[in-house]
Length: 445
Ligand code: HEM
Figure (cartoon, rainbow, N blue to C red):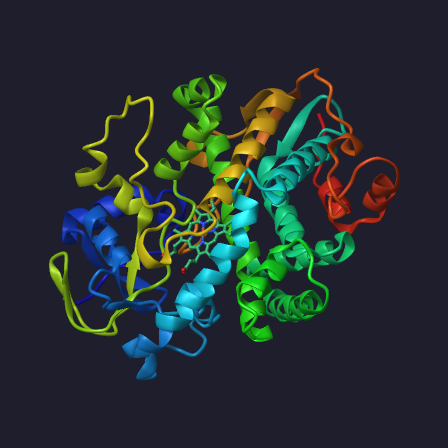
């Protein structure tokens, strides 16, 4: 069957019409070409949910189940292959997956449960990071231009990643810069990945010897049998997951500044609701990494052969008329039955944390800015080309700061790893490569 390429300029700019065309032509499951490789692309809500839930246990995420790959017909330099070969819990199955997932669940719990001191301190730190970043972007004056993706939404969750990982400020910054190199897949991405893997192994070793109040130490406590390699691979997931959080922050801001109904929801204080609506309308993890059926299976109008790659599209599922058509668009509370956080055995374990970061980021931004005007109409925003992510490359805005007092960083009682503040921290900031980079992005009036 000759099939169309999924990833085109049109798709990057606006995937919605492509999803609708595929749905009209093939039904809820469409054969597509993904960078030269044939893939089943699932656009139906029920079908996506059915595969995610994996009730019959036939769906695997393990790349070793990919028949074409095992037969050698996937080129060794196929650009997405490294994504599937990272060998972490997101691609594991059976006992290995249960073990790693249990370690994540236990280790994340103190940071996601608001009755715990770790969650309360983290919340203070996130506020402080947000205020520090707004402080830097507004150094040129109370009004001006800013790229909210590069100057705010992307650095903020990565600072949270460093705090969760328990890096010192200086080491954390080197890691942030390498994470950007890796995620943006530039020419130095492979070298950055190697450095990051070494940094995570070094971190795992250090935390075994001297545990702290951080995610690696809590993972080790949850499962002391985790090997250094297993731990390093799991920890390497964190920055990527937090970059998805950055795209959620941007997607919420875009929705709020371009949609009066969202602005209204935000102005009555219902930020959770605003975040949920943005996740529904524009899920950051738009398409998921492959699943492979372990036996031939009927899906949509086709029989998918054992070992064929299947890509679930959360974004397309949310627009499926069988799902979207049944929703009340004017309801005060939007549906939580969406798939932006996945479902079933691989469902997201960091939903509360990601929602909290996003909520604080949006709340601080709209508190500190009296006005935020998009510099581009919504249909001209530059989206990052990606098979998996719906994320902006930049989010240019014109801002006007509100006249309110901002708490000095020293007031907030944030522990050591916060990036900047007054006194010693201000001096640290003046030497910091991350803050120099962020200052270089300032555009002023
Ligand atoms: C807005 C940000 C985020 C979104 C939209 C998101 C969404 C998702 C989705 C859809 C999955 C399932 C993938 C699949 O089934 O193929 C997933 C898995 C996962 N998420 Fe999140 N996530 C976000 C942030 C986070 C954060 C901040 C953490 C942890 C700190 C986290 C931890 C995980 C883990 C550990 C998995 C793998 C679970 C498994 O395979 O068993 N996520 N996420």
